Length: 113
Length: 113
Image 1 (cartoon, one colour):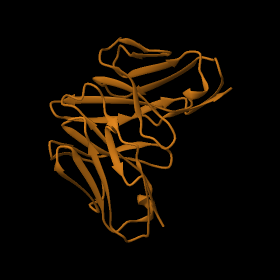
Image 2 (cartoon, each protein chain N blue to C red; image 1 turned 30 degrees about the vertical axis):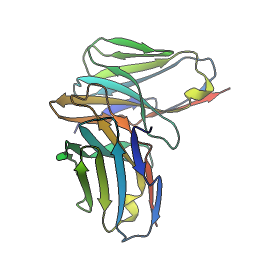
Image 3 (cartoon, rainbow over the protein chains, first blue to last red; image 1 turned 45 degrees about the vertical axis):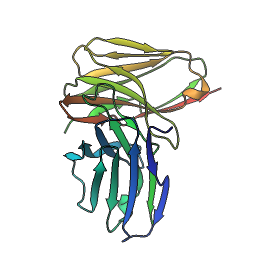
């Protein structure tokens, strides 16, 4: 069973469209995250949710809106997509206390054309 | 914000050679982590370090948490072709349910058989 699963794996869309990426974890972790990896492979946190509550919201355009319907899911909705949004988006989760680091999904490669 | 300086940026080595990479920060972290990312996959945790001065091994991998809590290194002994990938250091400061895993920019390792 995949611990942190994201769908879709690849997403190609036109500028101006609205799209969503879904994430689910079956590890029983309390906290979930979205990270963005740019073309230079730099990983930067976007959001953090703990038990459905938003904890971290880094400097991310408000076109990006995370939604956590329950502890095991954290979805990312992006409005009015722009070329610069093209990147790989990773979902991750961690247990309470975060002593064991984060478990990452395999990523969603978003390409905006 | 906090930044991690990871070096070298890339390495090209012969199979069987030892590898060393390191990470430094201008600020203190409670935890240092080392991740490996294979192409098309998310980062996978290799080693976690929780105490200043701690030296931890995982097979051919050895990592140390610097005494000042501002640096860490990762060594890989007797490299093999499957060691190819991008290695990331990451620092974590946590308190209760909050925390933010900050990544270095990665070391891309290439191994020539």
